[in-house]
Amino acid sequence: MRLSELGGKEIVNLTDGARLGMLGECDLLINEKTGKIKAILVPDYKSQFSFFYDRNFLEVPWECVKKIGNDMIIVELEEL
Image (cartoon, rainbow, N blue to C red; front, side, top):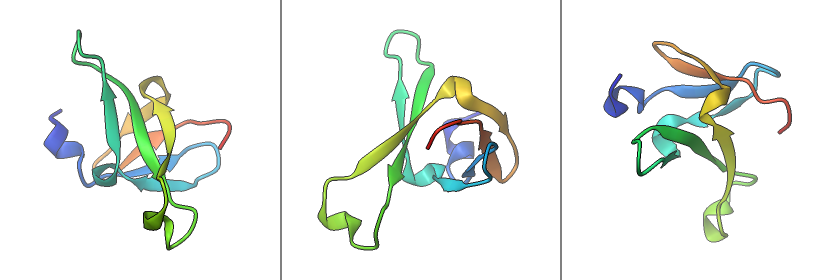
């Protein structure tokens, strides 16, 4: 699968059904040597004015990705 195909997918937590965000708004941590994805950095928007402050991120390890579907990416995170 190409990175461009992942762009519009929504990230959903399997544990509690929470919507974490869209992959197009996230950053990816990539291993420079292997080129493999290490983690997804999901912006944590606590309020509507969060763009005035430093952005916090929720780091989702790539091992927590359970399924990539047509419209969403299912991850399994125990603690949020």
